[in-house]
Image 1 (tube, rainbow, N blue to C red):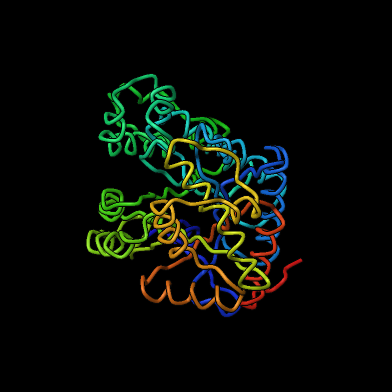
Image 2 (cartoon, rainbow, N blue to C red):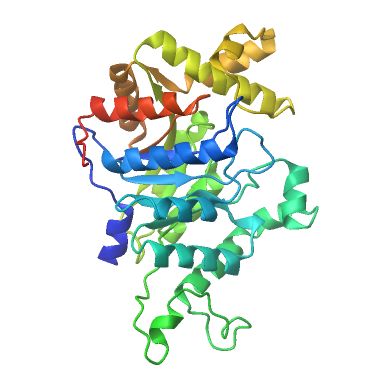
Length: 366
């Protein structure tokens, strides 16, 4: 195993957390706010996460959703790289079928050059949006074609990142720049290192593929909780040691929000639940305020959905959230928890991460 690359993947638990804690940010935009303010909040959360010793900070790719301003992960990560110094930054994830592999290799090679040794490349095969938007992104209506070709696209991207297409391959003379080719060119001194690849998923497909390739795996527990344990078991059963990892490494995304009291936590997470109801019924919009969410008249079908949705969000006081996260880590055997706190306003999200850090005794690194 490449020890340096393994160290990039594995985190070191601090404080009293049993596993490393990280952050997933969706750059949510609440009613009465703007994308500019949402992006500033993301910077504030990233700098707080770095100061309090969270291991990594990822952003996700979504499209055509008014309440989610994370359509361009590479752009956001460049912005965050300029405002942080230590924390790992990455995509959770880039949706590979939406992009040419060479473009992703160039974007993340650029990010690696900006923040050496701090960039993760998390990849998914879903579109991150609805079918019509996916067709506009991919310039084709044959959407399954991209998902079905995911292993081939992944192999191509990996070769661009490593600059190792075999002789005679049509792309053998094409190089992703910045990248390893610069270190092998006459007079070149740049490190040939590249961001580690993670596979993301909410079902068994990516779990099995990540295991077979010996890659780290991130599972979206926050919206596919019933599949978490089966997918992680499949990943571990399928795992083959590689140059990247000699043992499985599984991260799970967890929706969690801590507040100073239980009622406030419930008010905040209800805003995300109402957002999901609207998204599922074809009416995506900005994240509603807690007042609107509390006053909303849910139908019986909507109420059933909301109850199920909230059951998978760890929320409450800091101690309650810590207890829920510890239980989840124990039940799933996850090697890392990546927390996403979705709420209407930035203050509630910042307060949540601060409270969780305090509950685990994470040091304030200044």
